[in-house]
Amino acid sequence: MTTYSFYKMNPSGNTTVLIKNKDSMDARYRALISNKILDPLHLGGEQVGVVSYLEDGTPRLDMMGGEFCGNATRSVLALLLFEDSKSLKSIGENHWECHLSVSGVNEKVKGECFRDGSKINTKVYLSTKNHVEEKLLDGYKVFVAYLSGITHVILNEPHFKFRKDNYVEFSKHVRDSLELQNESAVGLIFVQKNDNGVFINPVVWVRDTDSTYYETACGSGTAAFGIVSALNNKRDFKERIYQPSKKSIELEVRLSSDALYVESVSIGGIVDVIAKGELFLDD
Image (cartoon, rainbow, N blue to C red):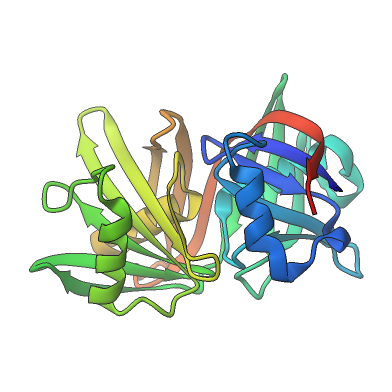
């Protein structure tokens, strides 16, 4: 039996298990270990990441499929605020920043965390090394946002409606139709707009674990929607984007003065710490 130290976080939904003792986990078996941990009869959750430190002391997050995840990155910031404040730089009252190394991206990721009473609010600045392509899917125009570590397809209602009974099959159909099979991770972001705001239903496929999940929140998918919206409308975009968890992610996209490219992208919101301790897995 192997013991792992863990935190379980809720970053606006998308419940995330963070494992701390990376050295005891064989990278070849991460997918198997992840599936065991996420089983509802075990700890449960939507995704697993491993937290470690580089030689220079930089916090490092590795997702089990090697993809990038904005919500898991936000969760690491909350973990650091709980037990590793030396990695955080104070930039104001109850306000800190940190630079992290994250799977799926080559450059370090900037993050911020705030304390508001008992609440922890974290924000992540995503890479601006992205591009958007317009493609045809089933006869309708869609936008594909290629971000660092993950690619998202933006699917607007009424042409594309999310269905819980076929999202795995439809995800494969989209990947095959748009030739995205070789991407490390592909998200389908079903977008619904009404008088109450913008709502998304995110479905994410990870190549290395060959897993497809309907997520209760998706930070990078939220960012992808904002990037597409900002570039199409040629103006900055700032909005609360509502997730299947019924919580929201605060999104801000800023464009260059000529509105031709993205200068900054950030996602933020409350991170709830659900549990911490030790979990046990049979060898």
